Length: 160
Image 1 (cartoon, rainbow, N blue to C red):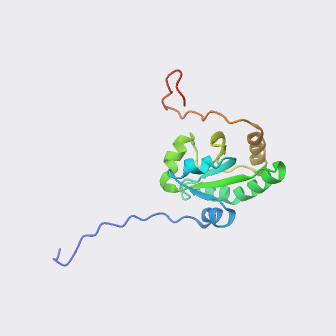
Image 2: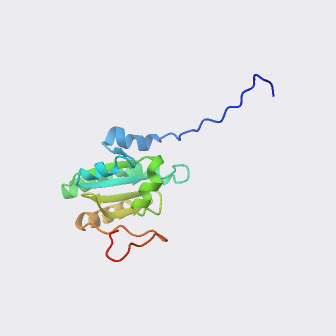
Image 3: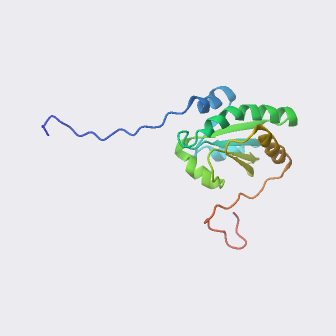
């Protein structure tokens, strides 16, 4: 190797955000969510859907969910006069936020109400199934977040 040759470490490449995901924020008033702003976003209250996409190369159906999500919000608003805020979790914090809400499958929509957990819709579903799950979520109370397999259980009297 000559004196003029310099070893350069490869520059890490941040995966590009697919246009269909980006448009949720740019055109449909979704909020980019990360570990730093999640609690403040939840504190705004009301009903929210949080999209955890996963890697669109490994889970291409996340792009389908991104297309359906604005339509689902419109239909829920029409049926229930319900304002539903949308959040899109950034890739850097997906694992941590997925663990917080016991998300086991990509992509997933986590339904939250007044900072509490309601339900999770996993994978790309038929339209009728989305509507059935949304109807159930609208009418149910907040629930306990399901435990992930192998997760520690709190001591008696402790909170989860």
